[in-house]
Amino acid sequence: MPSFNIQELIGSLQQDVRETLLQLETIQQIPADVLLRQPEPGKWSIAQVLEHLNGYNRFYLAAIEKALNNSTKPGPRTYKAGWFGDYFTRLMQPRTDGSLAKKMSAPAAYNFGPELDPAKVISEFRNGQQQLLMLLDRARTADLGGIKVPISISKLIKLKLGDVFRFLIAHQQRHFLQIDRVRGVVA
Image 1 (spheres, rainbow, N blue to C red):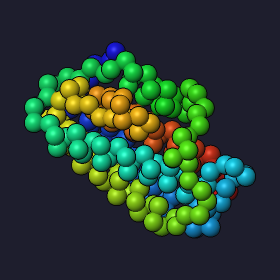
Image 2 (spheres, rainbow, N blue to C red):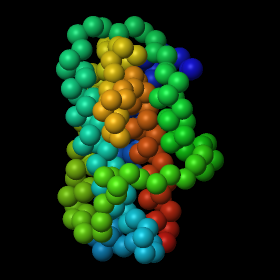
Image 3 (cartoon, rainbow, N blue to C red):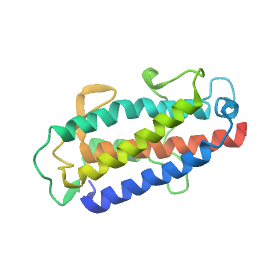
Image 4 (tube, rainbow, N blue to C red):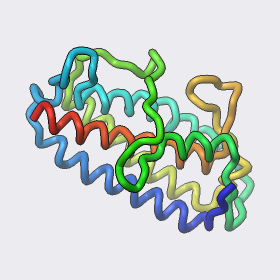
């Protein structure tokens, strides 16, 4: 499993979140009717993709904050990924050429219908990214390997905090590629 210098890992993840926020600035310039337009029946609109990400953020940001609040032990300078968390991160993460390792279906709880308010969806996502940046900053001195966070599909399964951050951000990157594809069809 890969090992990371914690400061470098956190810095890299924060940069990924900042890039997502830059992409969001472009998205918020798109008219609401276009944000709600599905590229074809059964395919998500841009607003639905963002709401899907909001659903994950609602769960994971609260779980990460709770885990950080319950932790008092300072962490080491390096972090070694867990095999399970690293596997799911690599599965989720877009390849360098922008392709995806595997197509996946969203769990029903994270699949939202077309009746959305794009302004609220975008605002919630932006606020979630700001919270994620703050949590990453707090994690600079935390034990990324020792703190465990439950996963969204089963609270019985817990991953290392470092793996949760990596997975969550890879998941966002994956869906921002989807947003780019949808923009090419509906705009």
